[in-house]
Length: 329
Image (tube, rainbow, N blue to C red):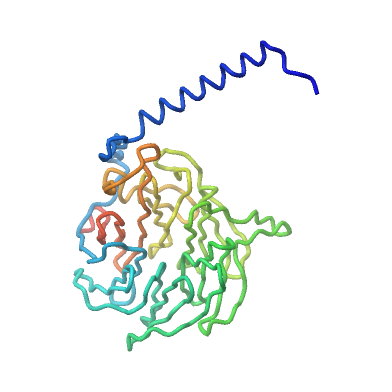
């Protein structure tokens, strides 16, 4: 083996020292050694011309942690907390709790049947309010989203990066978005535990691919139709990494997206054309503790009611915040 020349050794050592000093300076500059909350500069405000919504109302969930939100018939709002699912009327008043512990995602059928996924099970809750196991989940499964349509029950599983479609009886029909070279499907990438699916009024399934900062569109049978979205920090783009984390669909088929890290809620046409902003990062508070090096803030789930109001589950305030299109109040 040839020995490295002395000059090359010296240059390499100097280079390593420079990198180490720069890294140390970065850590000192960005890490809070006093134990006090780091001071993070606020993001630039959203262009007012792009801000198409205003906050019309908000109500507290009463939880100390929140995981998911869904809207059902009669605009009842369902919020998953640590040990139960709380139901609110359209005025934000609590109507009662459903005893499902550890629900991480929710969906409500047209007949009012609630679907709720925990680590071990997917439950359904009918009008009597008693949870029943709809499907046992295999060890290691991590269901992160459920969507409902006439075509079936769509279940996103982060553990193996695919969406499965079932009938209402729980019988498996087909998979969506799993990697398949034959059909030119690259597969999903989700480094963080967020993978969402929503079904539009056109019956198409919209699946987030957050590692690529995109949304993919499929038929219910799993045939790929389109992929859209661009990574970047601009307001029209999806911020790396990894976004969007949650989506919902308006009555006309437009897509509501929610991003984490620098939180923002936006609207796109169903073909990916940017429409505007519901709420920019300046509308969301920092949590009590946040890493100054990344300014990472938690994800905010989103839902849409029968009036196309956008409901944002603020995971810092533990509140449901209701946004309406300007001029529609």
